[in-house]
Image (cartoon, rainbow, N blue to C red; front, side):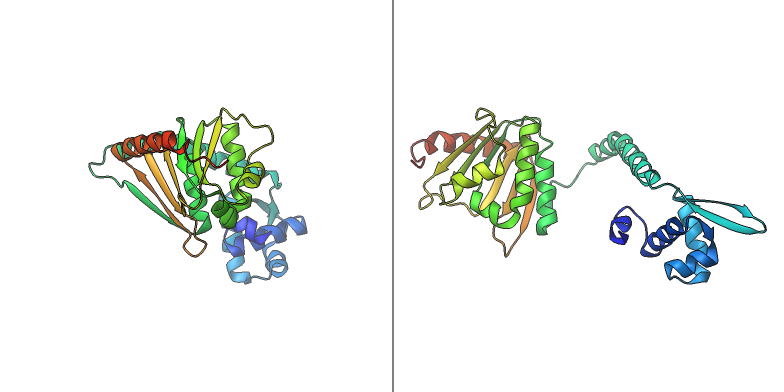
Length: 251
């Protein structure tokens, strides 16, 4: 539970002190420090930090300050408030970004979490998604996540066309990744001869972006290139490949 609390923005000591206060049902700083196993001198400072973040409240009990933990639901409320504030900031931050004469056009990502960030960006598209991929490769590096990605893609009604090598498990993986009875008009997948057309990367073309992800488990990296001209060219090349791929669809 400590790890989860730190992911919500608390330090390790703050998480320990909050849990100790919650378990005690409220107490004095000295008792909380003992229960949390932290230094008594720094505990008072930590308690005040938690008060400022909305996790605790306090009042004088006799001549000594008594600390109470706010109900756990407060944690969810605090995070919801932060999310709302972040959403309110987005238009302002975008307006600042758009005023820059030279802004970054390429974003580079490493590791599974980085690759997930790329796919989460793809889920925001309002236009058709085109791509070359290798279903076996995706299954090898992120099977569970990609199943959730496909489910979200269907839920968001993102029109998709994909070309992939017809490996031994390709058809089985389509059934594994995509929801049962998904709309075949919403997602079209062409399986082509793996000996002639084998992809070791996932290339996605959406809106004015091109995302490239390595499907090699030894180099889990990826990038997003934001360029209207590149996206337009890649889209044209894909459409040409899609027409030609019908001649190589695995039977």
